[in-house]
Structure formats: C-alpha cells, structure tokens
Image 1 (cartoon, rainbow, N blue to C red):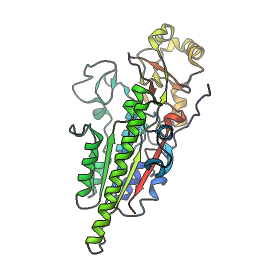
Image 2: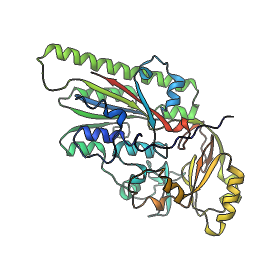
Image 3: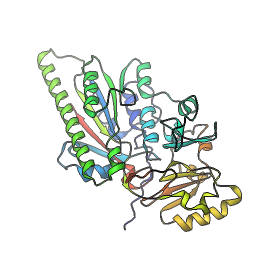
Length: 384
C-alpha cells in the first residue's frame, strides 16, 4: 500500500489566515497574516461576505465525490492547508479567533489541563471517555479564552453574525442554516456571516471516505449552497434594476471551505499494549492520530525503543521540544498553557493507523499530516 504524502501546515496559507482577511476587510485589527487566496477577492466591496465551513470536506473528499463541472469544483479558487492538528477543535477555533493553535491552545478533541490534572473533552467539558463534568466551570473558556472574530468586527463598528447548531439549537438541518443566512443577508448594511455545519464529518466518521452516504450528503450541501448563491445573485440584479445607482454594495461573496479532511483508518487500542501503557503517567489525549504522551522519566528509554519497534512504520515519535522547534502548532507566540498540555513526546500518524484510548470505532478519522487530512478547498461564489 502506498504511504500517504505528508503535508505540513503552512501558516502563511492555512485556515488560520482566513479570518484575518475578514478582520482586515472590516477594519478590525488582524491577529496574524491574512490569506492571499482570499485577499484578492476582498479588494471589492460586498454587502454580504459569507463563510460556510463544512466540517471534514477536504480536497480529496471533494474530488472523490463531486463532479468536476459541479458548482463546488467549478468555483474552486485554490487549495490550502488545515492547522496542526487537522481537527475541528484546533481548526475551527482558529477560524473563530484568527489565532494559530499554539496561540489559542484548543489543540484536539481531548486536551490535558494541568489546572485540574485531567484530560477533558474540550467542546463537551467532560472528563475524557466519560459523561462526567470535568469541572463546575468551562475549562477551555476559563483557562484559554479568546475574542472571536464576530465580536471583534462588532467592536469596530461592523456587523457580523454567527450561524451554527452550537449557537442556535433551532438549526438542526442545513436547510435551516441556509435560511438563517438568508435572513442575515436581507438586513441592511455590509456584514460578515460565519455559518458552520457539522457534515460531512459525521458521515465520514461513521461510513468512511468512499461511502455513498458521504456522496449523497455532499451533493445535497453543494446543491443548497449553489441555490443560495444563485438566489442572492438574482436579488442583487433585481435590486440594481429597481433602484438608482448607489455607493452601497449589493453583491454577496460566498466562501465555502473546510476545517480538515479525512482518511479511512485502521484502529488499535492502547490498552492492548500493556508494555507501553505502563510507561505512561496518564492516558494520552489530543486525537487517536496524534497523541500526546507523558512518559515516566525512568521508562523513557524503554518506551521509545518499544514504541518504535511496535508502531514505527505507522507513527513518528517525536520529542515535544522538536515538534515545537518545527513550529507544527504555529509560528506565533505560544499561549502560557500550551507547553504544559503536551507531555514529553508526540506520536504523529504517517500512515492510516489510529491508536485509540477510549472505546470508539470510526471508519474515517483525521488529525494528522497526511494529504487526505491536511488539504482543504477554498471555493468562492463571487456575486461580481
């Protein structure tokens, strides 16, 4: 089997740069470098700048399931990279903040928080692998808070809206998400709208990258976004015919992107390797394809030798200081909590194997540095 190509995050051309282009456009101070792929469109003024983030829709998935002449691939502006880790917690926090993972420290689905000496499922605020509350407050928001792009734009006098199931429980379908975006677009004035949807990620996890379920989901998402783009374009033309020329823009720019891709994986469970498990001070966290390892000092030499013998074909085992030196988590100023969350080694998947620490089984996975996981599309429907 051919080994997947490894793609390193490009922090001049990645998902963390996109929100900084938006901030710059709305005269709010960026948190880092902007995205050149997007900047060239933002030289124009628009009434509505809309970003649809479709979770898990990586480049490889897009090309596998959607027609080359279909709406998404026909409007493909370019390919760029996810963050490291290539996972929803890290990448969408970068989209929401304009910060790199080392700066915001929302690093993976599960993170170690030294403040309570526990691994915590970040978005759910429960102890890893359980339903038990991790604390009577939100660990991530308390220890690693950030100001989101929506609020930054508002604080600089602009209009901005967040539409997502986690922000509005009434959004339980992509159709309803699009309805919310339509309603925002109808409001007067120039505005930014960020719309997040949790598919095709769910389908990819449960059915795999090549499944018909994923194809059907993607075709539905593509059709609905294309319909919305055409609708907004028609409204603009009708508005321009009905009114006198104005300096107020009427066009809409729709950007469709993803936080990461997916790869079909093989899974093993760490508990089945007691010779390795016993060397650890605590359970690993982050993701099954990138694990942070707190190795007992007296077991370090044995662990490195045994891990490489067992998993060396599928994982790179790197000292954390080397990972930081390579700036895989970003080039910015690390958050004060960042280093203490990582342990002393990182195991980074380079094939399709995942090492599970909890009793879950997924066909599709993500988090590491393969082409399938790292490359994401920038799709642009330009009303002009």
